[in-house]
Image (cartoon, rainbow, N blue to C red):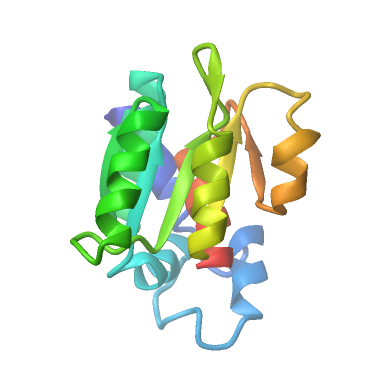
Length: 165
């Protein structure tokens, strides 16, 4: 947890931060806070984010970053079946209504392709989170979703979500 706190503080440095400056140009997306994390907190507050990640430590880091940004996290789910159950519930109008998702591309011997295609049909924005450098082809590329390469800081994933939700 100390590691995450250090990362969190790094992103609260304010207008000189490159990510903050990028988002600052988008009217209505930045509040009166002094840094990027504050602005993303306002962007992700009220959003329910599906987290599909099969590596427990990575899932914990991403989940914590999303929660720090104000999101309600569903999951982490470790496989396609769990993610599809969450999506089924949301599609039937049950709680939670999904506002976005973070998808690990490789889930053991499977991929998240079916989950991604389902989210596209439902118009739920998502980012891919992958450690495989060859994931620029196939369904990952055709989806048009942002790709965050592992290892990545949780705040980088939050930044990508802030841009698309």
